[in-house]
Length: 407
Image 1 (cartoon, one colour):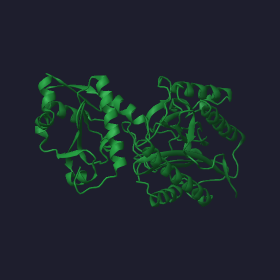
Image 2: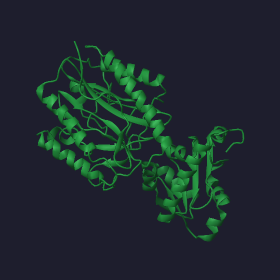
Image 3: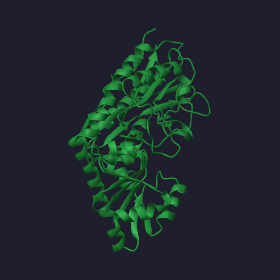
Image 4: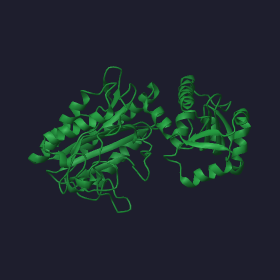
């Protein structure tokens, strides 16, 4: 750490604990060295997000090799910072820091994030560090980040407070005839003034998200590539999701589904609004979404297996006769009920079949039962929850229920 930079002792301890937890996982997995490449993971360990690599040995002190900006990394990082130097010499650079490790073993086991590292970059790393056995360390990091510390939770709560305020303001701002684009522009401006960084990070390949979506009527039910129950028409096929230039009309659902990222941490929240009233079927579907959420809340506690929450939600949707509309429609249905959230909006755990991970204290999960009706719209609700020792804490605090805007 740079001698002129003063970082709060609690922050230093927080990041050291993260590194220690990673090293414990490495010990169990037989990994000698973790080469951290992903920006978010680098920030998670160091408190800085400059271009480079973090080297974490199974035992001993990590080092942050920085290409750009070395000076800024010195000011921000809680671990040792050193120049990356020539990429061709990276193998020799690593040996210089962990010579004993390479002397003891013929082939050092090095882990990295296969889920996000481009193949071309991986092949370059293998070329410059040839005497190593490479292994996928993705699961280690995703499990590591599932459990949130009190510091992380404080940051998520700040984002939740912003989401609460902005939703209330947006509901007062809506007028018939205004376009979705006008409304999302208002929301984005208000978020930015409260410290929203202007992006929502996603780990999934080719998945992108800015702030979220405002989608009304048929535009909300427009299918798209985004891995969620509501895509939105978007402005153009070059950005085929989110808000469009469609005018917001009376008696149609208005889905406001947005995230807010403040100081690196995200909250996720959805509310349904209507100018006037919904027809009977859409109203019934909205009521079903709230009923599913309430039923899910009853089982939000340590030990509950993630996939059972999804399966129970599907069963409830069937009991309402709405299974064809649950979490999308037809071949565009998504097969989950909720997802972990933190520095990225698609973290673990996932409430989906095959995800047998039990809930644990410290997990933060967004749960979003929604119903999609082609040509008519999407209705639903979404909250973000913290799993506590004996249950849950609802982190999203915005008013619930269908918000009716008078004509």
